[in-house]
Image 1 (cartoon, helix red, strand yellow):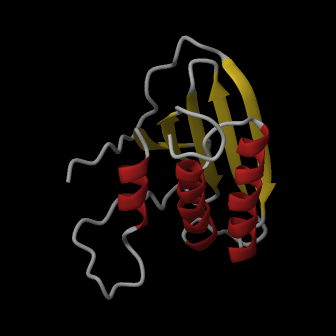
Image 2: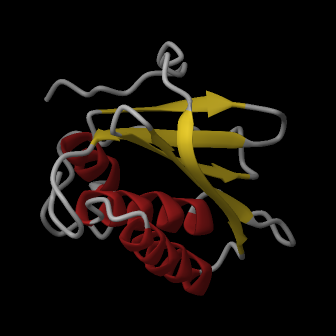
Length: 152
């Protein structure tokens, strides 16, 4: 599998954000679930496809709550909708020393290890940015097509 993972963000896009959404969530399973639900509602309000984004946010928020958790620290979700039709998803947690990597060859019986393979399959690009300490941000970008609710 050829992963699109990168340790640095892609080159800045020439188009400015048309819309932006930022919110903090508790680093819990409930916070991860709420992140997915709020992202779906925000994307519906923006009238853009949300299914791939919802799955990506569900995985990244779950990882932030499980692997990026630091007691008393929240995780942040940012959506940036660019005028050119690109959606950038960013999930920032407080564990910069815990860098994610897609696990190739996870067994069918494994309870974890396949999430970033899913992100890789759904996103047009994704990666990790460290900092500011002690944080890290996992990002994914999607080219959007079509109307509300569809898979872009």
